[in-house]
Length: 343
Ligand SMILES: [Zn+2]
Image (tube, rainbow, N blue to C red):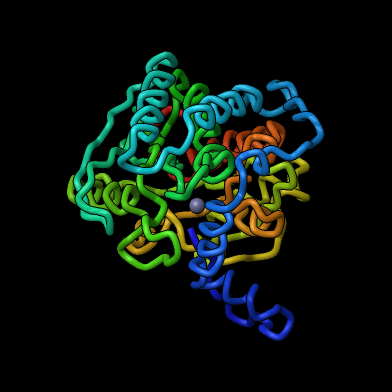
């Protein structure tokens, strides 16, 4: 993903290099990332940090187990780089599918072929489809691929949201849900070009999924798309993504504040181009729950320092708790008369 220029941005406040790096200039940051990644010894990615804090007990976070989500991230990071088309990416697919099967979640890997700057490639979205009383669809998204950079294992970028959605699937699959609920683990969010974020070299998986759903008719029944991306940081600070659908943002952020997470789900805005965009472009309500700014500020975004020690199981538990708490509100908003709802 990349940061967008926000209207009213006060350019003078920012140093020119930061400004370029943060808007449409993902390339500037990525150039630095690529250079530094190549030069930095691997040991530099493992600085001494305070031990990983334990997640709150799941009974305090709506049943969502931050520790389980964190373990999934650890397992994915242990695979190594998971760039689309690589062996690591395929091992990540196997991991996700096996975990989902173990939870009794129906998971369909959906393969597709796409041209990329490094040649034609097969990618796979893994889509969990949980039937509900209503055919209307809630769609949750994460990307599991990692940026094509040396020594980059994407604990936060690619790992955190995937661990989150695996734990979310564990809770949702056995549950009676009023709405049909899909959880899509997307391939190919990251650009192959290491320095430039230029369409169509990005969001391969989400564009494919949106196109398939449009063809099948599923998209016209999709009521809300909730994307999580980079949600595991120790200093997680989720700003409202500026292009995301207002009512959906308001529902999520107000729920978070009611649960006491106002320090994490903050009221300021930031624009990000990401996997929610293909759905917004097709006029489906969509939101991106993302913290791009903190990893940039801490210097680990698209760097080999995006490692497990940057994450907190508590951050995963907070976001998971909020998503669990938002579900009944979405069900209530879209349930058809006579359809069953969970209490
Ligand atoms: Zn990324």
